[in-house]
Structures are given as structure tokens and as C-alpha cells.
Length: 76
Ligand SMILES: [Zn+2]
Image (cartoon, rainbow, N blue to C red; front, side, top):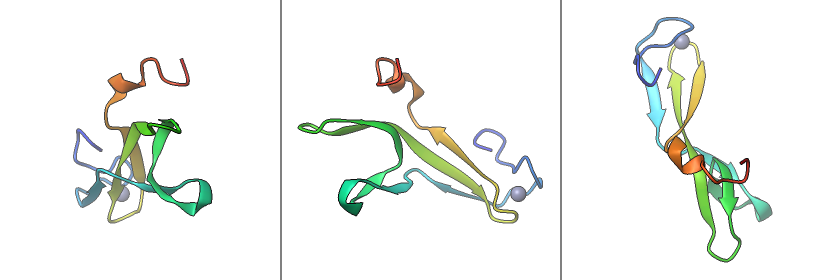
């Protein structure tokens, strides 16, 4: 969807995009939806997601905005 500009399910080009998806952290605090978070002293989100959603059928895809930043993250 990000590259094609088209929904892979229904073919619509009416897409919604947001560079930040809200999530809820400890204490129900609003945080960006991300792969992980360093912290807690100098908290920094890494692998933050952006979202593309089809306005016709609702199909959605998440992308990590900066995949290179995942090197050395919690999963490696
Ligand atoms: Zn669709």
C-alpha cells in the first residue's frame, strides 16, 4: 500500500495514512505505537509504526518508519 498507493484487497486508491498511531502505555498514558521503548530515564521509542488503511474495505498495513533503527534493538 505504501508504495503502490493501492489497497491489495479491493483495489481502491482511497487510502488513509497517518505517520503516528497511538498506543496506551503503563498508566494508560498515550504513546506512539512502536516496536519498543528504551528507558526509563531517557525514554525513546524505536521502530515507530505508521499506518495505511483502505477507506473502502478497512484493510490496513503497518510499516516501521525507520527500519534501520531496529539494529541493536531489544530483539537482536
Ligand atoms: Zn480495500
